[in-house]
Image (cartoon, rainbow, N blue to C red; front, side, top):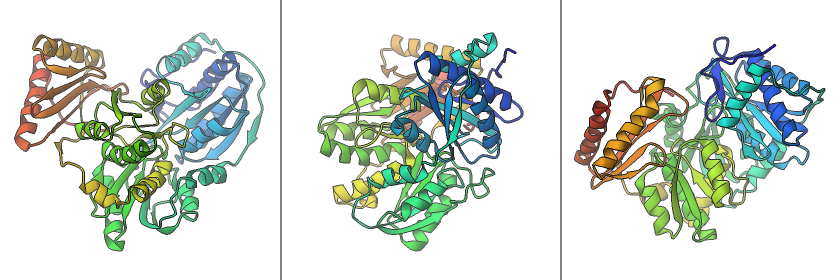
Amino acid sequence: MAHHFHPTSLREYDIRGIIGETLGADDAYAIGRGFGTCLVHAGGKKAVVGYDGRVSSPMLEEALVKGLNDSGVDVVRIGMGPTPMLYYAEAVLDDVDGGIEITGSHNPANYNGFKMVLMGKPFFGADIQKIGRMASAKEWVNGNGTSEQRDILDQYVARVAQAAPQKAFRIGWDAGNGAAGPAIEKLVKMLPGEHHLLFVEVDGQFPNHHPDPTDPANLVDLQRLVAEKKLDFGVAFDGDGDRIGAIDGEGRVIWGDQLLQIYAADVLGEIPGATIIADVKASQALFDRVSALCGQPMMWKTGHSLIKSKMKETGSPLAGEMSGHIFFKHEYYGFDDAIYAAVRLMSASAKLGKSVTALRSEMPEMINTPEMRFQVDESRKFAVIDEVLARLSADGADVNNTDGARVNTPDGWWLLRASNTQDVLVARAEASSEEGLERLMAQIDAQLAASGLERGETVGH
């Protein structure tokens, strides 16, 4: 029988929905059939499947594996673990041609979804839409694949630990009851120093705080731990372990683009002149810092799949997003792995000969807004950005249109872009003074008003 997905579930970077409302076992089966068909058409035979700690994940995994098997794909099941462990398995297992992680990432407990990689490349955008078309037309290949269990956790953790320096640090780790917990428990036993763990028990209801380290409210427990124990720094993880949050020894948040400044200093010391990629939401301070370190800064579109593709194209050894996705090709595989990024923060501090707190203190204090997201009708969101770009062009503004409109002014910069995954517009602004920030916000409001909108309540992810 043909299968029709809920229109909201097939996203730009992954497939995501609410269990029992927009996503269920029949969807997982159809994803297995569609992805399996793409894998077979690409000359592949075997896929690796993993899942996060959500209550609904085992049910979806069962249906997904059946769908893959019914398309003639053999499946290696690695069980519960973080998304980077799935990416690692796909990268290092010789007999594997693709992989799928079942994960709701940082979304509420009743969400779940799928992140996919095929032949070492992110599977997104048009690929995901193709799965939808194949399901509607039932254009699937048929076969009889096999299924086997493999435990890769120890091998993955040992690989991450290879990046650790000899120097002993005192670190706080907050797994947020997400899928990274068991890996972190194993990892810290292999690291020098003193390690204090929070919420490493996997619990799909997230009883302590929401597993999204980009929201400062979710870092309060970690800040308390670092203060009480006088630790060097603290790290936190999202629900599936591919995004990192960090705080220094004084409890200050180190945002994704600030972490990238630290990593860039380390990597550019090893590879002078390399291209370092960051998304359009990143601070100008980051791009200036990469230039000062004699690297080539590159601003690119937001989205982990888009960044990974750009890294492959440019040969970049390091990239990152404001949201805490950090990608190391330098001495690693090029995918976003927050657990590895935490170890590389230790390594960078040791190599640069400065504490994480000192490295954070050296950064210029910019005044910026958090990411502001507000509702706009799906049919209007891209049109509004086109209208804004047309007006800015007519005004002769200094605009970067890589992903939406990023406008430079003497005060700083502001950004307005359409989300690829939701019916929202995203705005951000950064200035060197409060007055400058107000002027930038007024420009955003003026552009919205000219398109018949106003900056409403900020909505969640």
